[in-house]
Image (cartoon, rainbow, N blue to C red; front, side, top):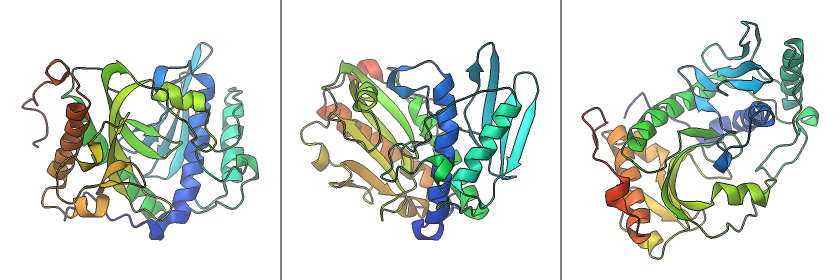
Length: 308
């Protein structure tokens, strides 16, 4: 068992998870409100840093600013391109209090940002400025989440480097609260049926406008424990019964994706290699069954890549 990959049982931190999920949505919506639209909503996500999560630089007229979650000092930090900084501690506080604190800090910096104050992709649509139910923050489990995201980010980047075709950066999507990297075949896809709670069908169809094989990490939810996942859109015939590796991975009919339970992966002899094997195997399921031009889209792993 690798201490680099800590335990993250859902029942131990689900209240903190619910609060942090909504906090990241507030921060993500600030980036969304100020950024030009990029295909597949690539202007929306957060990114893993050596200390937590970041928006990366956000435009504001001819100014820039950046919002960071620091999961070591447990602070939210806003920095501007002029060298100004505002920060406040992350502690047990309601979503409404967090919303007021970040909006006050932005206003104090001369950043008049307006967002739609409702969560996305969650069945609960309580406005952020009225949400006093979600108010938990357990620093230990937030730091554990960051550890997992940091190591997953490292491995997804190594996997990403093997692809010559269009491939996304490693994104942390605050709507679904998961980390993902997506490879594209280069062909258009049939229109997505949509139906994601509190998310425009237009946005979903833009995200899946082209054929993809997407994989990443999800901390779990709705009774499902943390897991690595991989799916294809559109899902080719025979996909769910394709033989993949490692043996501990399987296809979930409920989620419509391949799942590698996080707990099983972290207990493997070599979690890094186990995850890379899962990523490669499930990508091959999508590419082979979907008749991707693999010779044109792939390159061999380099000497600097993680071993498979």
